Length: 398
Image (cartoon, rainbow, N blue to C red; front, side, top):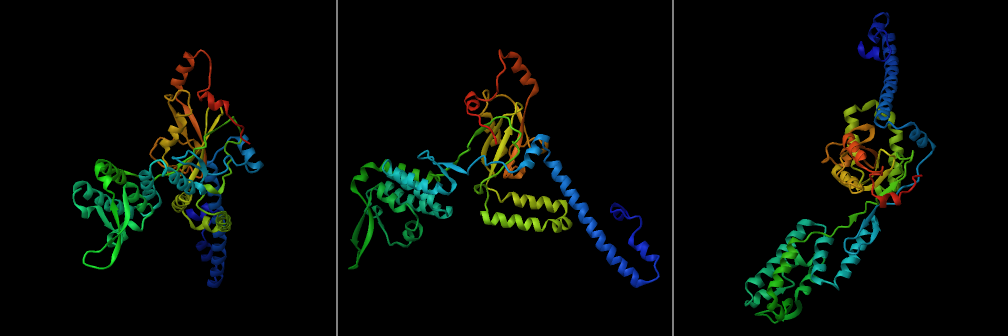
């Protein structure tokens, strides 16, 4: 009875049917009332979903007005990366090209180091890379431990192990040439045929410690990775702080896929509202979060200034705390970050996509009231806690 009362019924369908003399009439009534109840249930669930959305995204009145006026102008033109070798800042789709160019240029500085970068950076299968460098290190180890043994100073290029583990990976031949091997065609003992070998130059035998160092470098190196450019920006106080319009770089999907996904989601909303429980919706939301590689985050200070940066969606909240500290005049000042709805972000180990802070979010900063009171009392004049050079470059947020 309770479930029917929640839908506005004074009596259950069974009670209505019991008062009728005709079983056929009862079945007709049951079908009609069931259809009506399902439609009404759909309305109830839809209202619940709207209420949840409103509760999780409470905005000041002026921000709601701004939101209704139209979409915000993009605050970033895309996702950018910094090449650790050249310092160049490039768009996401240009980062590998820039890395290749920078590593290629580094061959004129240190060809051994450059070849090691190629091996670790451009061969995607990490297990193959591990097996490759371990085998290459074994070749060098044998030379270092047995310099008098000529057989260890020659590597047959058509050797099955060399072909399967080393020759097929990018950068390996450049490494052997850089450490002092040269290609020679030599006769095969007991045969008339000849084969190609890498042969270590005689002068390298006088620099065996250097060869050992190169072996250690080969084993210990990591892939060269372009660093995500935070695009740190400070905005002046604005009612448009909660409005975001992101470029396609922030998504795993193409522009056409995004449009199609939005269309399908719109068409399916009523069906989803009827069939999904809250737990199912939360699970689907988590699945949605994994579609984002990056997130654009804004932190609003009590004086209204807004700090913005770009982050990986899987980075932890602690990274954002550090990002804010680096923008402060005094980085020791204690503060808390509050997510949408005022929820405190106390677990700094959580990733942004686990907190629902993707693909964008506006957070608020709250100072420790007691500490700030002491700071203000001791200060000769009131000043912003933000670094002066940031304040000098503060932009307006349209």
